[in-house]
Amino acid sequence: MKSGYTEEKILIWGKTYPELSKKHIETVCTAGVMESGKPVRLYPITYRYLNDGQFTLYQWITAGIQKNQQDTRPESYKIDCDSIRVGEIVPATHDEWGKRSEFMFRDKGWQFDSAEELYESQKTDRTSIGVVTPREITKIEIVQRPEEDAISFDQKFEDLKKTVAAQRAQIQMFGDAIPLEMKRLEFLKSRVVVSWFCMGKGCTGHTMQVLDWGLCELQRREGDDAALNKMKELCRLDTYDLKFFLGNLFQYPASFLVVGMWYPKRRDDMFRW
Image (cartoon, rainbow, N blue to C red; front, side, top):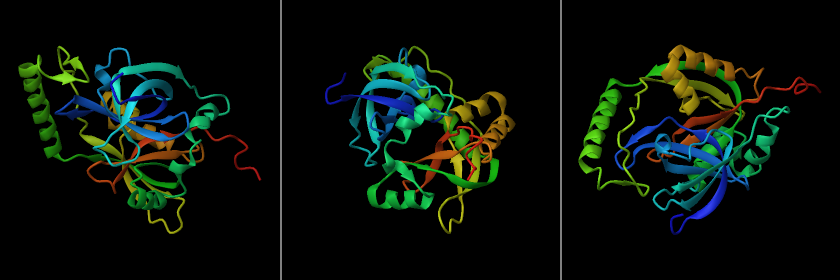
């Protein structure tokens, strides 16, 4: 493990679709909770290039982490990818994700009654990850991304390929040599966007992109309609006890996105008085 890093056990609950990176080739923003329930953002992780450290959602990992001093968000940590050891997967149990919830919601500090409370916490404490329960889903749609984003993506990919080819012997990635070949990363031309009301009094509504890797990967493999239908299914509030995991952007801290979802099925007795 790298000097200055502390070994921690972390339950992974979120991964976003891979992004190109000039410094690391490709990164996946990953989120989890420590055994105490404290939320952490782990970045950068070159997930698709990991040999033995690939993990799934709701799987424990053990790894060396260090507070990212270049990122003022309190949840942001650097991770020593070479130190990752994968552990037990926590399944959705018969009582609908009960075992997972023991760890996920142990720390009340990142659970908010409304998105507005999360926004206020961001202003005062730089909070960048929060759990919010939607009261009503008003719209789920596919929104096309600007054509210039696709052009920029293709140019960046080609530039990275040239850099890797020219400097393979010199470039280091988390202490390891650059892989023999860059993996192709597909640009998603559209995003799933959800509009919703939270539980806040006087809430005027929120509209957010959904960057959950599972949903984005379904969109990549099977198309917009498949992703749209999946999101609509999970947003049936009469069927699922839905919560949104919200995370903000480093460059735009006031802007939050849906980076993960909590969706155990509602029990038959949930609405009994």
